[in-house]
Length: 427
Image (cartoon, rainbow, N blue to C red; front, top):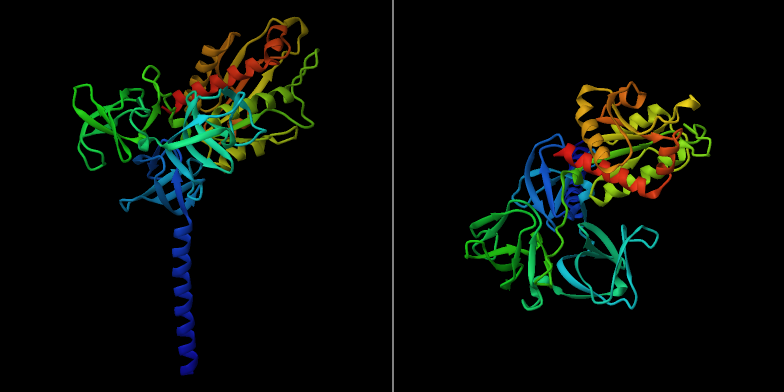
């Protein structure tokens, strides 16, 4: 009996020790690096919770829990909080803190939305162009391009030293990325702040010390700014592009392309089918929001039938900060082809602000008639637990609207409208 008791005690100790070791191993494995320029740390897993602190790009965080696609992390000061999981990355990805590179391509170098030759081309760079590098991984380099994150093939660029290791003669200006950025009296975080400045402020580089640039403040004093809060330029006359960081970057957005599968939706006499153009529009909208850092979920990404219940449930499943259902309207009376324009619907009073902001974006960006914001009793709004709106973006029964809604330019404007509306809504 005594031997049995000793065996059980020993086994228990071994299990406890194994548990401790596995916990330590898990903690060591679950370290992530901040990839957003500035990342809010919140008191709970979602946008509704208060911001308790902020962390900067490339900082390392220890993940101690996960909830609703948010990581609970331990900060360097020992405190804990929640960050959006899609704004951090595994530390195995090598990151360059504001390194510079030069384009070496003989022809034009495609700038892409994602690290893949199948992704959308956002623009091109030419031989000799200088770019600011954020990260490099698997043959691709992430850069800042026209105010957004983009990717180029690493084969056609030449990396220079880290920006703060370059001689000051090759680095001319820095542009502040975020509002309320500290300019410090010395090249470290412990030095006192001598000035706080807003995003877009440009300084000439006077010198380089470690990870800090020496600049001259507006008052004529010597100051230092960290390399992880600025963009750099090699031109005295052209400042570095300001990186866009908005509260939208933390949001989870569900985009719902109306109809699909055996439910075609509205159809025009010329062959326009609602289910096809809602999907095309949704993909353009998703791409625009993803470029801004938002996490985007489509209720369908192909020509498939998805029930109204499943659509609404997906918003709840992902704890969406906004659910946007895309549709194109029609009138059955052939004599009323003059009816045209877009309408924004909401069901619950608490969602009117979301509707008003998105509708304002549509009104500002689209040339077609804006029919305003209205209350509408639609299932995906009525049964939705998350903030939700339904957009009727035009009438397939209208010759005026039909021509527009079948154009890629119109879909791009819709995407810009929704981006603008959401940015204002989250502010």
